[in-house]
Length: 336
Length: 265
Image (cartoon, rainbow over all chains, first blue to last red; front, side, top):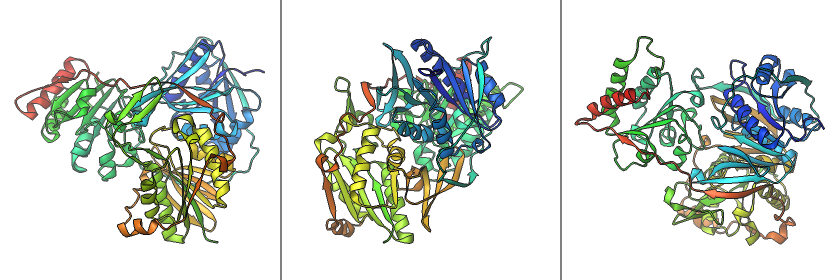
């Protein structure tokens, strides 16, 4: 059957309507797996009016893009997306279905896996082909161990963290786009009743090139104003470990850690963060890690590239001021 | 009959333990907890708190359901005392956590729930602190054929429906479903309350049912779909360039300089 045995990635779009960064990364990872398995690479995108995004995916490495269209798929609805995907997966059996470990991926893939009796590995930080089988690597015990797992069913499913795969350059010959009208077999029971946006999505934490985070040692919400100042100077976003969120100094949308957001920016600046395992699991893949902490024995220094032992109240304003003085004329933007 | 809530609660090694308390045994592909007690998975505690708030607002009977090889009765007692009405323990050597995956766990819990005799709402934590998979709640709902809503920060029941504030990356959305339904609960909902000593004493008299592998009629062997083939300790440590100066302010300025020189910023 056409498409059976293939590597399939489930794409999603960013606010702009273009494919999300994670989806291009999945195409890169999917290409490596497909080459290792000698299989084709397909992308599936669900929504309404997804033509541009589908063509972009076809240009970025997918042999085939399935554009699963329906007006009711314009925003993520668990049951409608589930039904649309189950309808599609009646026609072929992928070797592996990859999605981002995103709000959608975390909610949808378990539904699909249990509906189809497939094995699913979530929150993967790596995937590779070895001896004809796919091995997935994922953190367990709050990141205190890394497990390598394999799926024993015909189709393997996995959710993959941001920045695990590497997006590939556009190909000379784009893949084919196939438009399919979605159908829904089962009635919908969940009823969405509206949403509240709390976070400024101009610079989403997961995509920020620089993240400036505060920890328990910030002592209150006042210090977070200084972190915001530094973040905005560097064109980045503000994060937090769990204690400031629990204490209400920072919104929960800021939380970096295994149960908050997992980030892998070019530069992560950890201020007054001791470095608990659950926080480290959310940021240890950052390019360079800079720590400011008054405790010389804080674990964060062991996992950092640069550190200052000192009270952030004195270190941080001087650091920010020195960076500002040194900033080139365009200001605001990063000058790396 | 009033509202019947089942809260699924897994016992895990205390996730707040330091990294040294999680010994990675690569040859047996197991993490061995050292010197840390079992606790109720923190997200399952959030789920229990959600149940207790519903009970306070509209009335409900709460059954705490736990599955494991050998469950700490002290941990169960303390959780039940926070506001549950009964406990259902599924226990046996066949339920060694490292032998079960999300699929076999969901099947076992579904079988136990069928035995428990009726429910309106099932609450689970969003994921367990040991396996971090986040699959069992959705799997359980799929097996039982009931609607599921994930990542709740608020759960309310009214007129046979559950209304959930569901955490999103940039805020939250409100979703409703008819009962019976399953909801997975996130940390934003709030911590489980502490029981009083008096409540702990009184909880000893609450009904407790213990089921073994034979009672369930489900053999977990062969149900797993995911196999762990390797386990290792993560390599996180880096070599840190400490920037030193006479005063903290000077160190801050020097850090900016060093990061520029090294073309980091």
